[in-house]
Amino acid sequence: MPSPDLPPSVDERLTRVQGLARLLDSAVRIPGTRVRFGLDALFGLLPAGGDVVGATLSAAIVLTAARWGAPPAVLTRMIGNLVLDALLGFLPLVGDVIDVGLRANVRNVDLLKRHLESAERTRRRSRWALAAVGTVLLVILGLLAWGAYYVGRMIWLLIL
Image 1 (cartoon, rainbow, N blue to C red):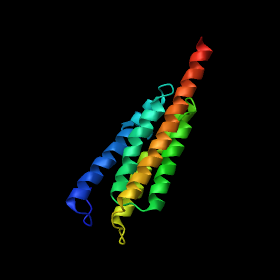
Image 2: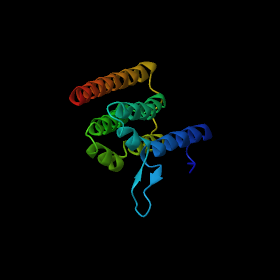
Image 3: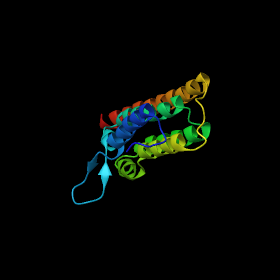
């Protein structure tokens, strides 16, 4: 729903980011329940690399917030949500169940939306801040990919 305080272009982009979060966290409702899940939980079912794919898509929301000038405190909370979601995803099946309830992407969009709608909206941060957030996310995703490789290798060795 459009906000009267935001320019149309920001509103349209926010709607797209909300759509991505919904797709990742709550796109499908289990019939007869109030439980919803999205692609992130399904990616988590894929051994080793699925959580990396989900975290990579989640990183797009955090990078969008950085591009829009979200303050470091908001970005830190968003990265914390992303890391928690990714780390819990490495727990077989239990992590996927937790992922359904955590909804890290929806939380991150809510943080971004509150920032954009606040009365004292901050100006866009300098390019180095965006680069710093991008670097942190790349390091996190790299570590997750390494962890997925390591877990996959261990599973492979146990199977053989």
